[in-house]
Image (cartoon, rainbow, N blue to C red; front, side, top):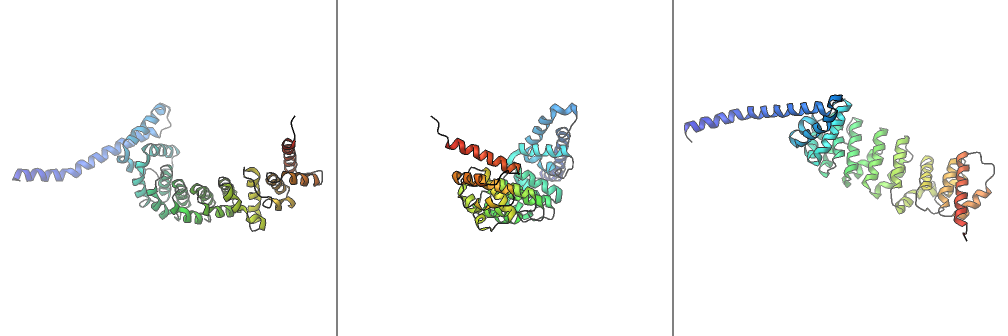
Length: 315
């Protein structure tokens, strides 16, 4: 290479970072300008919000760093716009979000995990597991939520631990995540969650138990007959059996038939009716009248009507 060639090469090398920096600044300016429109609530931008989101999403991973930097925002419209844009970018956004799990903190970190919930990828599991015990409860919440959406078995143990988290919202989302993992080994943990002090956890656990196969549900609820579950869990379990489509052995709900709480008696009658309608009707007819509890009385009338339809012989 002659002298002039060396000079030109040197100038190119010197100028390259400047050119690159200018390109980055231009890209950032473009993303910023479009994002103002995408997150705007002004009437004049109403028809431009969607196209602005599409334009940013079309930049793909090139524009993603400037979006990740905004994830700590406290503005509701900006949060919605970011969610929409990341969803439009799709799973191609996951690698940079995975990297951000290792570089961001607190509120922004929780939003990174939230985006990964919308874009479930097994490549995100290790990063999410690394932050699942973060001091900020909302990071734990979103990490557990994302792991449930991904459905990787590596999350079974951590989600089991999250069911005992000190924050009730984390425990609630852990119950939902446990159901999404569809792992039968978590069924006893969901049954135990029926006794949680927070109603949201109990409700979430009950809904996930209802999704289990009948055979798994029967096995999980079997401790009812031996009185091994705490009272609140037993009542919640009876409510599940009363309303779901599975038929349980008489022995499972029978314990509740003599309970002092009329609601428990109502659940037990309803659950037992599916397996032994004749025996339940004998029990109902033997019950002292009048029945003061409106719920129990309505349940008895409902079961009596169902029994009459079941036993009526049409010509």
